[in-house]
Image 1 (tube, rainbow, N blue to C red):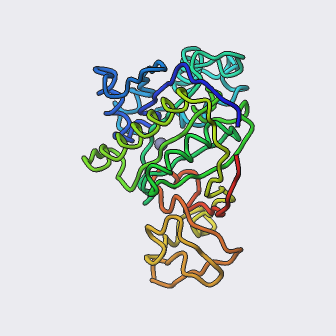
Image 2: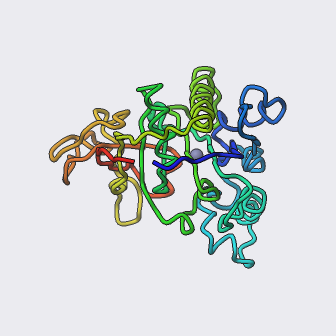
Image 3: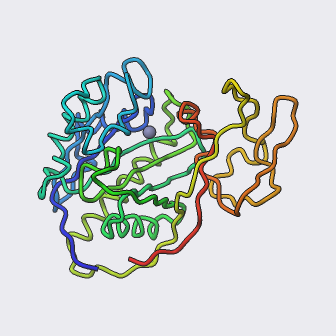
Length: 295
Ligand SMILES: [Zn+2]
């Protein structure tokens, strides 16, 4: 693929206020960024939503990481806390629709209550971002890569502010909790990403690559009654089964009388199982498909 040189990397923590791994690493690196500095590109750390962390919630008024669609950040009538913050971050990091935004790469640090391990999400069909993810996976084969491509201008995610970006999702860890092992895993993933970008800036050899990824297909909601009350939760055999195959007849949910509800649908792999933040979104788990893509 074509050589790409990265000039400025935006490192984001606390896009979700109660995902403390990213919050505290952002604070640490704002105080002293030696650990994340590199020779051949500039970095800046952004603590995305401190007001949400102050109340130890994902957000104040609405999910910040669903507030970056171009039409929304350009709409002057949208003025709640996160809508305003999205506009500020767009001015500092983008502008999103600029030919040369202030930053050309973003790493956004998240954590999950689901058993994700170290997972990279890429939502833009961008060969450079995919190459970074692939080279990170070569260095650390435990890393998984999930793709779900959408038009960058329409995407509501913070990563859509820059032309190239990855989201890091680490789990499982509860909301509002810090753990040394998760902090270490996030630091390792960050060092890996920054090392890969630094090495790519130093070479003209941009390899063609085959990537093993999981592609987002659809979401499944919890079984609910006519009033919208949840009547079953994830089956114990499926709990923690990130990237495990699921096929017709496999246990998926268990109701409160301990009756099993079985999966009906095409074979797939389960992802983001029982994520605490997704109850309000009506998502019990996501279904992904395993595939190989060439970049
Ligand atoms: Zn998050």
